[in-house]
Image (cartoon, rainbow, N blue to C red; front, side, top):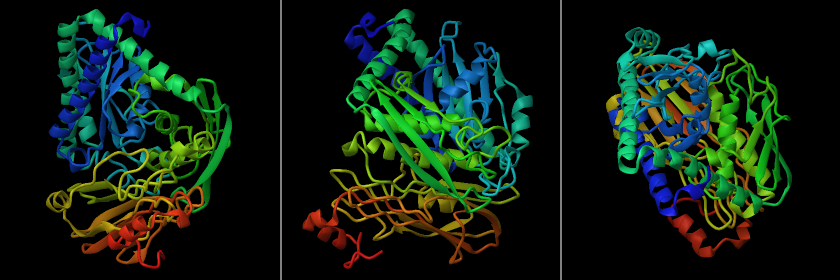
Length: 537
């Protein structure tokens, strides 16, 4: 089916309405959630799929969630879903990303026949496992990371299966919070069916279904046109992760990106084998990172759907870091390895599109989890840092970079919801790499835990700085401290009441020669306290 079958006006109206459905799903989820991680940080994503499992519209939420969602829909379709069902899953080896990301998939059947699927994915602050928050630094197998759910019916024929819900809640800390967040996801998916029914009433069933095909065709044609503007060739790059949580040895990620006409092939065959720790990433996570980079390097305004992914293929050998086999631990792969995949694919494509690729951003999500073993509370945060400088402007200060797109948890929310006190939350002067354009600044967040707790840190760029480009300087590395003593990039430790945890996040790399920087911009940086007079870090 081609876009010719719908006139341009109808196509544009339907495209915006379908995206609106996905956005309304997200708003419903956020408003209905109980945990600050979803209602404040918005660590969740929603999307619509057609009956063949192709994404037709998404809310602009979390890149690592969205690019991996097709795998979840495919996994559910293998279980013969019926109208009135809702499947829940989190298994990274059967459609998930990592265990805290719980996904719900609902068949959409406004007139009794399945025409698509609604999908919501949310990071739950705890799903069991060896440490509160289910983000343990030292996990060696997935069983230690939490409750593992293959696709299973949570709702059958419109009724919640209390046996399944009871099983889930019996295996998590703070089941009251989990129950509320699961209910919010159900509400989000229900919203999609009601909105789709209204579109059927407005445009007619067949027009809407033709619109599914048309929006995908539209995005495919636009992304193919953009890829064709890039020079053909194979472009290579590599980088490393700073240990896997078990050892501190660097773990290599290597890629070869081939542009051939209107297609891009990304090969990770040079990447390290799967590791003993939890930095392994399912192939769906690697695909998410690649899709994100391709959208950034082409035209981010192209409507994101299955059509954007069609011209892009991704391969990683089975048993490698980016295509591990069960029961490999993977919780850090979704949050940290995905960031490095983004970095190496950006670096490779810089040779093909130098003006479109920034210097390295912070390259980490700076995952901080604090929780009580009795389940009374679990706080989870990804902390922003520096965005890499671009060819024509400075990098942004203190933002989420790459595969995450969350907000921060407000200080007021942290101190109201948890037995924690925020001591400091500020930009880090001199942390952005200098150059014609300066890299964004990192952040410093210090929190005091007012009760005995377990602290888990999953971070990167503590040894290897974010790189500058075109003679730009590197950004500053990050640092983790507990009561003033530096701790490893990946650590889980029990701490007594009164302990202060400090996370200093990396800055972004600079772009271009510092000697070419506008003197007015240099002076403004000094006046704003972003750099010191001597510029030393």
